[in-house]
Length: 188
Image (cartoon, rainbow, N blue to C red; front, top):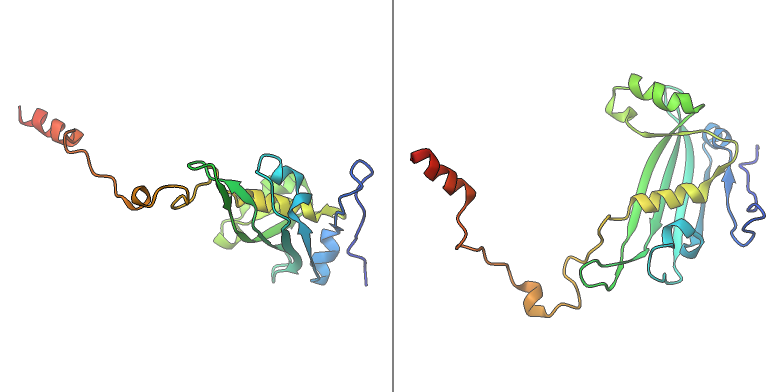
């Protein structure tokens, strides 16, 4: 059995354990690599977020080949980063449960060339360049970041008084509809 590849981090950050996989071996054999990693290990993710609780990110990467001989990675990620609500500025746990299928291509040129030739809806999957040393945690971190909202906010902020949270805004009837004004111009 060929090694899937597991390595320690380069010397600049020895405290972070990073899993590397050979995408070609993983897809050819159909193996799966999975794990749990503390959310604090994902530096790009948490750099602008509030302090994170000691939670784990669960992830798995499975290699597969379709009937046409194309290589894919199936990435699954579950995490609950804590964001800051932009209305009330209170903590907002945001569950991320993502599943993504990534097509492995051989070169950067294939990223663009194959994209123009594929027309089937199934072929509209994200592509990445295959590598004998793919940083799985970087791929997981990217998937979590893509799952975060641009402007996070509670559906109903917990710090709002209950009367304000349930009160429906009343339409302002003093202001005429712009279409009513146009209709008046049409009649004149």
